[in-house]
Length: 318
Image (cartoon, rainbow, N blue to C red):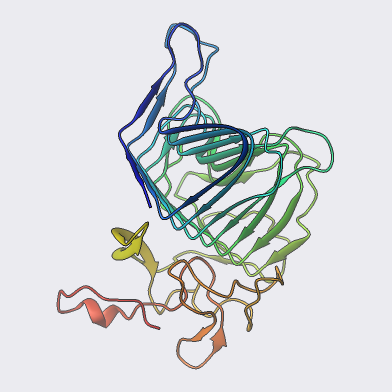
């Protein structure tokens, strides 16, 4: 229940700038219902080999649990909003929003690394919306960047993230990592951009189920994944996040291909199913026009375009 706004970590004299708002080392940290807005980690320009990391949070040799939080317009060279390095155990990120964060290396929103060795710790990212994040020209970066750490990705949405020739609108892995789950995600890749880059030899995820892609694919050999040309999202609807702060986000219309595209049942325990609740805490699945099935992405229940014809703000159909 905290707000961290416009803090700066400045690397001076060859030191690495880590964590514009929070620098955490060794142990477990839990963040709930908090906002991180406009925080920056700035490297020393005179030291070309020194990077800044974690525009909002830099956490080392630790585990993180983040929920119901907002990361907005934070920036660093590596990990525009969050850098998790040398993770020592399983970390989770759920029901959160990453908007307008920027980085040049690793991850525009999140850059996560483990300590190496086998088995790798895992970070589970669930019900989290990534949009309007931006690649700073200079190196290779994804919205998510990962190295020496496992990933489990369920019911996330990646939309309108701005990437250049060496950027990826979904995932960038720096080495061969274990990915256990890629299920019920929505990934939109801008024209001229790429969706993901995974290292040669990376195994196919254990569970790949009911993902929706537009503009590019990843792990496309699963028959339940769909490739669409238009996701039919409304660009701006206000929703509450981080202690009821209202933020405008992209949401699917009821005619969107993500609606009722997923499994017929929800289960937090079954990675092939959708999660039991969406980003706003609403139940899954709902019926949107007759079919009872989960929606891919962070929201359950589409919006009726006619609700906006009179100029009034619509609300999700539940």
